[in-house]
Image (tube, rainbow, N blue to C red):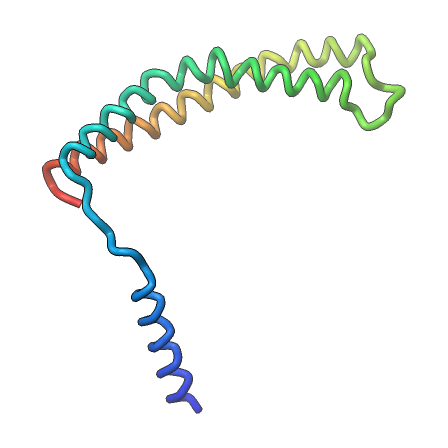
Length: 121
């Protein structure tokens, strides 16, 4: 029984490998295009974090803190609005950090694509 299971596993693994599509290497042109895209992302994502992600985080947090509490009698109080204004600073900070981390990741991808031109895939 043990030999049968081993043969079955080998056959299944071989079938899985046969089902995969062939991998094609990217051309130099594609590497340059990807490098350029990632460099643009690297420069724009901090702005995305400041002007889009941060305000969206603030909006979502304010909606929840003021109008989305579970108990209806606690919704819309001045205390909740003051707390939401205080938390807005942190939410904007989170948006900025998200933008910066995505920017660094895109920069790393750009460097990897550029290196792939010279040293192959």
